[in-house]
Length: 360
Image (cartoon, rainbow, N blue to C red):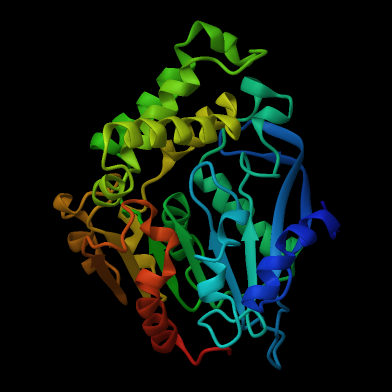
């Protein structure tokens, strides 16, 4: 088990304009490696690499406890880089903002199977261990404690899959954090249409003869079908109607979306990413969550539609939990509202105040 910090000059050049504009410290990138990691499935990887980015510096109290660390977790198919945008970092990480990176130590990991961390497309393809959400959270914890020396978190927050991981953090490590903010998620087993959607993605790839048991030379056509499903489920009808009000504009927008996603998606990686949710079900242990928690969903989220009424019921079991449903407006973007803190930052501010003095 080793820790290796790698400063990536090219990455810093990419982020330089953002950093200069927003005023927050440049991200530092690194890799944390684990030898012979055994997954919940009993499969083992000889060497597992977790890539991450950090902003700011950890601050310890007189007892050596880190008091300013913030863990932000990405969604299915994403990576820590998704938070380094004007719409997210530019709203939260700048001087005087809620997660001012000159005061907080912000950690943006790439989960196993994602981004620059170890994943099927690195070479093992369908022989890659079948990781689940529990593996992912355990690995996040090991990255913090063994790789970065972080023994406490001021805040855990995440979007979509990262939101689901946030619920799990509250149960698996209830004394590790001061506050929790899951975004665009539900604290129950994935079932109903959500599970069927994931099956559409998985089966579109796995049942395609061109997949060749993961040993394809070019991306199988089933990947396009999987992307069609994902685009539909994460769409925002009101916003998209305004963006594409004519047939020609809708066709162009659709073609551009498909092309973009195909350019950055691998079929094996996607299959594993969507299959990983099979072990997710925090509902039996919701009473174990100790930290203040604010769960935020948006009313136009087709992945977690409000008519299910699930969060209204389950949040009552969280001792210090609260649920916020953001109504549909010109500012919401369906499931993607989770990455627009301008829409929900007031609730983050309230959570930070409730859970302790900012910057401690």
